[in-house]
View 1 (cartoon, rainbow over the protein chains, first blue to last red):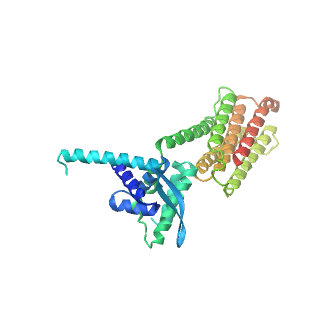
View 2 (cartoon, one colour):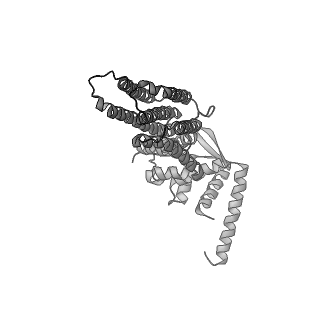
View 3 (tube, rainbow over the protein chains, first blue to last red):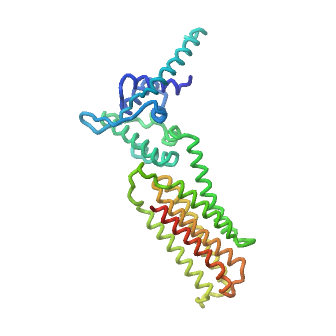
Amino acid sequence: MLKKDLIELCLLQILSAEDLYGYEILRRIHESFPDTQESAIYALLRGLCKKGYTERYEGNTSDGPTRKYYCITANGTAKKDDLLHEWRRLRNALSALGVE
Amino acid sequence: MDQKTYLKKFSRVVHWRLPKSEADEVLADYKELFSQCSEKQEDMPIQTLGEPVQAARLLSEPKVYHRWLAVFGLMAFCLLLCEFLLLRASFYHYPRALMYTLLILGLAVSLTWFRPRHGRNQKSPFPKRLFPMLLGLVTVMVVVAVVMVGLILQVWAFIPFALYGRIAHCSLLLAGTVGTIFGLFGLVKARLSDYRWCSLYVMGFTALVECVLLLAVLVALDVSSTTCLLPYVPDFGIVGMIGLVGVGVSLC
């Protein structure tokens, strides 16, 4: 499992909790992965959208312009479960080897 | 680097690497990101976004980008091969078949690649600098045509006959090279800003092919009699017509 997959998992995880707009997603992920550039996170988010794991829609804000919100799709939820399963398997494998 | 400079640089790179519709979408997203930062009274540090070139590279699919590079290479190759023949100015035979093949191949590929995607995008305003550049190229061609006709008909008595060949060669070299430069510029602009810039490639290529054909005739023949040029006149007309149709199609 690569770092890319971990970030994808995080993206799908935060979108499964609530719909978010681009900047907010980048900000949250960048907080957890400060050494990853936001353009790379955006590229992954866009990749997920192109593969149909997430969708975009225009949402209104109370006092500002419209924003593009991202939401997770059914395929995205399935992908998140796969990545989560893979992550747990890897974590257990590392634990078994004594890597904490 | 401030946001404006970043976006300008990013726009150029992203339009080069991604298909236009995708590039416009990405650029709109980046503008939105910057505007959302401003709303939150924050400055999006440019360093967290990475260099524009690197950011664009992350967004492009290698397969799609390599396909574009191959198409660009093919279109540029057709043009540059003609330019090479013009610069070499040495013909073993009249290159009719080669010129038609290169012209039709270059035009077909460019018109196919830069065809408008109806329904995807609203038609953008006509590019400002395109019309003056097309007009400039036509002017160069007309001037060269007048010079060539004048030389062939020997209407300028003040020019020593010994210089006729050199003047003809230089005129064709100049016009053809201008066509090549405009053609390459049109190709790049068609990718970066508007598909209608492809018309400059078409016109530049047509001008170049006309110059190569005429140079080949002049090099190969004894043109002491103007009638010896007559069998080749239809070729110039056909190439011109192909170019005109191509320009019309690319502007639609």
